[in-house]
Length: 231
Length: 231
DNA sequence: CGTCCTATGTCATATTTGTGTAACAAAAAC
DNA sequence: GTTTTTGTTACACAAATATGACATAGGACG
Image (cartoon, rainbow over all chains, first blue to last red):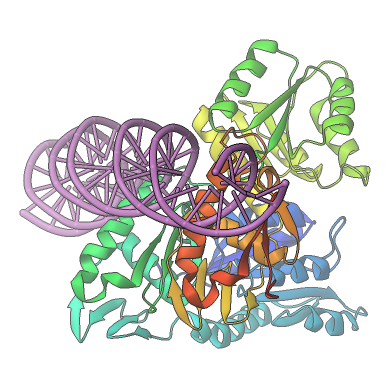
């Protein structure tokens, strides 16, 4: 169900994008398309794709440049990137890898090859950060089973609270403003009152119970922070 | 939050500009208005806005054309642009994004949506300064986690004291008058008594404790100074 | 299709915490 | 010893956050 991965295709030529999109959709992926780096950036912020397919040659901001930019920003740094390069631009391989892309494919390629590589990259990048259980004090969040336990006792969390906690546990000791949290947990361009964050923080704390609610800390005038250190 | 962002509104219809201006000012933005591309251009040069809201349909130079022009000029190339388009001009979306605008909003829109999108765009275009922790003697201030520790022991600080300390630690060995401190820490346009600074200095010293309060030094007849050297 | 849920966002209201000021004490300067 | 300047404290009010209640949207399920 929700396991279908979202792929962003960035290429300035519409027909190529279409071809790729069709191939991927047949393989069970969800596709979003962009024809420029700028548009791609907005779409990444809004849609949070699991993977970016990036054309090496593009008018305006080039693929490599864009890849580098994505890597720099914490928010987009761990989205896997596969670079599409035309034959003969072999050394783009070098630059691409320098920019931190995860794989590159030389055009022309078969849909089959594309899907195979995409799977491979997802397989080796996905387990890295997102699928490992995180644990603090006696609180454990397991992304695989989608479960949270406090000293081995299961905790009931709503979807939003789960994502919030997951984000917090993977970004500890750092103060986030309400709008940053909205970006990271809710996704970009949702228009939701900032105060709504408070309410979900409240729900999360309540669910964590006395044993663990100290982990979610208020930073007056700024926002919230998740930390095992007490003040 | 120190400096409110400046937004230039470009639309040929005054009432619409007004409406937008009101909405944005309520949300804490500063507004400048222009009714044509030409006027807009001078205003951009003079006022250096942080963001341009651009109507797609305008007599004379159209919005897209203007956007393109702005992008070409190195001086104005990285000012974010949000395009306002009327409903039905859906494909202007394409052209707009090609011209390098950062987002587009379809009229009619709610003030709320406008503000939300504006925020989102500013958030993702404003480069976040890399904030390094500062440390003196055994006192450490970490802007990321928004935390202060004295020999690894957390210290409780109110928002103002935090900003004050942050300012001091990044501007050491220099005496500041009370009014300078008000400017730098409180922000330029607030009216508060100068003596208020004394009180916050007091609070800061108290929070720092015996171990570190020597760092905040009184400079008689002048103001205060933060320094590891003793007088 | 309705009905019963759950999850979510928003509001109104409490509660907590921060801030600026004034008044007085203490220290320097003169 | 008087005059400035700074330190300290208490306090009222302002601002930010916490909390509980409510409305609604969408899903599951009959």
